[in-house]
Amino acid sequence: MAQLETRSLDQPDETRPVDKGMVEVVELDGTTVMRTTFQPGWRWSESVRPIVGGDSCQTHHVGYAISGRMHVLMDDGQEMDVGPGEAIQIPPGHDAWVVGDEPYVGVDFQGGSDYARA
Figure 1 (cartoon, rainbow, N blue to C red):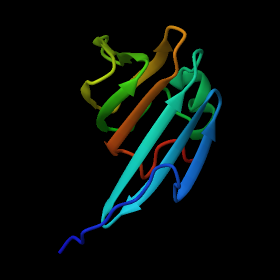
Figure 2 (cartoon, rainbow, N blue to C red; figure 1 turned 90 degrees about the vertical axis):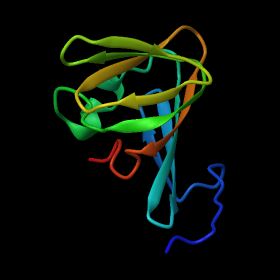
Figure 3 (cartoon, rainbow, N blue to C red; figure 1 turned 135 degrees about the vertical axis):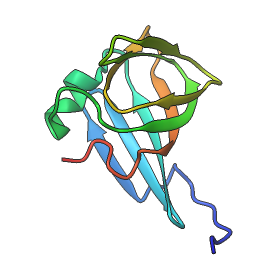
C-alpha cells in the first residue's frame, strides 16, 4: 500500500544536467517525479540525444507545464505547442524545443525514471 509522503523538487534525489537545461528527480513510493528546466535554445535532438542516442525521444511523458513554451514534433509529423497551465501527454517518438526567450519549466509524473540517462 502506498505511503503518505511529500518531497521537495528543490532538494532532488538526483540531478541530471543536459545542454541548456536541468532535470531534477525525486522518488516517491513507487513513483518518479521529474522537473525539467530548459533554457531558450534547448532542443531534445541537440541537448539530450548525445546522452541517450537514438533518432527521437523514446520517453512517454505525462506532466504539467509550469512556465515557458515548448513545441513538440512527433515522428509521424503531428505537432503541438505546450504552454503554462497545460497538462500534457507526449508518446514516445518525438523531438521538442523551447519556443521564445523564456525557459520552459515542467513537471512529469511519468517518464522521469529513465529520462536523460545514458
